Structure formats: structure tokens, C-alpha cells
Amino acid sequence: MQPDTPRIATIDLVRGVAVMGILLMNVQSFAMPEAAYLNPAAYGGAHGWNLAVWATELVLVDGKMRGLFSWLFGASLLLVTDRAGTRAAQVHYRRMGWLLVFGLAHLVLVWDGDILVHYAAVGAVAFAFRRRPAHALVAAAIALIVLQLVLSLDTPLAADQIAAEIAGGHPSSEALHDWPLVRDQFGVPAPATIAHQIALHRGSYAGLVADRVAEAPRLVLGTLWSVGLETLAYMLLGMAALKGGMLTGGWSRRGYARTVAIGFGIGVPLGAALAWWVIAQRFDPRAVAWEAETLSAPLRPPMIAGWIALIVLLLRPAGAIGSRVAAAGRMAFSNYLGTSLICAGAFDGLGLFGRFTRVELLAVVAAVWLAMLLWSQPWLARFRYGPMEWAWRSLARWRLEPMRGGAG
Image 1: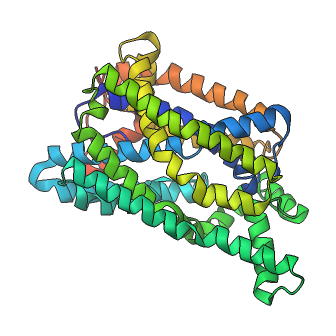
Image 2 (image 1 turned 90 degrees about the vertical axis):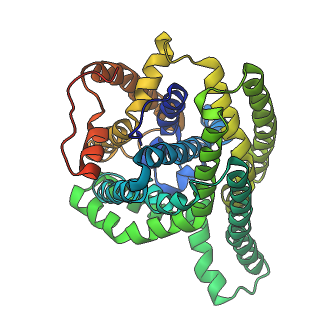
């Protein structure tokens, strides 16, 4: 996650916010049964403050922090390959190869919500776009987002069709077979399903690893199908944002403020309306499927741009808070994997899985954020790279990189 290039302060800041912010969503996957991520009625609380946390995260965070990472991944790809010169392809694909190895190990041994495998696969494709001008990158990204949106219609439309058949009293055998799958993914799973997932995560480590090995192909291919084109689009937008000066702090304050106003002006009211609609539908699995698979997608790009602009406006790399956030961003790879080890160790290793509400999980998030902010800056005062950044860099270059000496 940390590019092998000279630092750009705004990128470090944005990456720091992203690696911290994404935990707000990921912690639910660590701590609760799978369906709870999309549907608060499935687990973790769908009333009072728990409902407020779900709605706020849906509007402001869900998909947006992942989007920030994807934009930054595209920008970092440009920085690394530009520096590599004639060896760009060799350097890039070696880095993606090792990222794939790290990701597979992370997925199987630590957490099945891994994103590194996905980034390695999509990053291999994004390399082909690196020389395109900014306007062509934006045009390609828009086309990819529209195509992903069209492909995403399959799931909610199928859910509607299955529900209509069942309501009509003459469902097909396929509908009878598929409805429990739709319910378990987007609705409130059967008690046996919840009980199985809780027992799995509170059980033996060997059982968890065996389950992840069995589920890995479905998880990897499912993610590629559901958000692969969107991820590629975001990487291209990140390249365009770097070339256009947005990610280097090269815009005027007025330009950033306008982007905040437009991005949040579109995303917040429409996102809030979408959250209200899902609540009004009593978290019916069909409504959740429409929200999660299709309706939220067009709101993410303007919100991501708005987040970048807001971060640039509010934080300063040399400030007391900004410097620590930027340090966390410089060590985003280490902090991402470190977060997984902490959360997997707590919820799986200590048997805490399924014991927290959404509100209670905010305390866990705050504790991990504090750890990131406290350790990243002192580490970089003594070492050039974060531990995982150093390992990735050394393996990609097939030599031990110097580690001692502050990064400056």
C-alpha cells in the first residue's frame, strides 16, 4: 500500500484517513455473522443508537473508504512505474505478484475479508492505462462504473423475481432453492446459519482456516464480479486525480471546497434517503439487495472525491494531528494487516465473536485508531519503512532494503 517513491504529503494524509476509516466497516466482519455487514436486523442491533450507527456508516463510510484506497492504489501505481522507467512492467508485476501472496496468506490465515488479492488482480489490469491522459482515464472510469452498475442489476432483479414467485403461491423449484440464499445474504439468516457462524468463529483455529480455504475461490471470484470493474474505475480515477493535481495538493482551496460541496451535496442527502427507504422497508432482503448491489454505487464516486477534498482542507501534514495521520498512511500496509491481527485475535482467538453491538464496536475502533496514531510516527522516526512495507519492497526487489534510519 505504501508506494516505492518519494512521499507526497496529501496522499499520505488521505491514505491515513482511509486505513483508519475502513475499520468502521471491517470491524463488523471481524465481530459479527456475515449478513450483519449489509443488514443490521441480522445481528448487532437495528434500533436506537445501533440503527443510527448503521445509517451514518452507510451514508458516509460504506464503500467510500474502500474507494479512497482504490484511488490511492491507482495513484501509487503511477508513481512507482514512472520511477521505474523502462523496467516499469517488471517492477509492477513483481509487486502485484507479492501482493497476491500476502493477500492469499492474509485471507486464509487471518481474515476472509481480505482486499489485497483483489487489488493485485485488478492492479495487474490497471497497469495498461497508466499512460492515458487524465480526461481519457475519467471517461474510461465512467464507462466501467456504468457497466458495473448494469451487471449489478442481476442480483436485486433476481431477488424480486424469486420473492414474487413465492408470494404468488406457485414458486418454481429454483425459487424455493434460491430464496434461502437471498435471505441469508441480504436478510435475516436462519437461526441455524447464525449459530453455525458463531460456533465456527469461537471454535478451533484449524476449523476456521479449513473454512477459509474452502470459501476462498467463492470470495475472490465473487468480489471480482461484484466490484472488480468499479475498483478498476477507481484506480483510473486515482491516476487522473494525481495527474490533475488533486492528490498532490495542487488545487486552490476554493477548488477543494467546491468539490466537498458537490460530493457531499450529492452523496449525503441521497444516501440518507436510501437509508430511510431501507428502514421503511423493514430491512426486507430485496430492499437491502437493491441498496447494497446497485443503488449505493452511483453515490460513491462523488463522495470519495468529496472526502479527498475535505481531508486536504482540514488536515496539515505538519500539524499535531495531521502528522500522525500521515504517518499512519505511510504505514498503511502494516496498519491494515496489524488491524487484522488485532481484531482476529480478539474476536476469534479470545472468543468475542458475536458478543458486541454496533455501538460497542465503536470503542474497539477507537482503541485501534489510537494504537495506529501512537505507534506509526515513532516507528518512522527510527526506521525508513513500516515492517510490511519493508518486506514488500525487499521481496519485490529480491534484496534486503536498508531499514534503519528515520524516514524523515
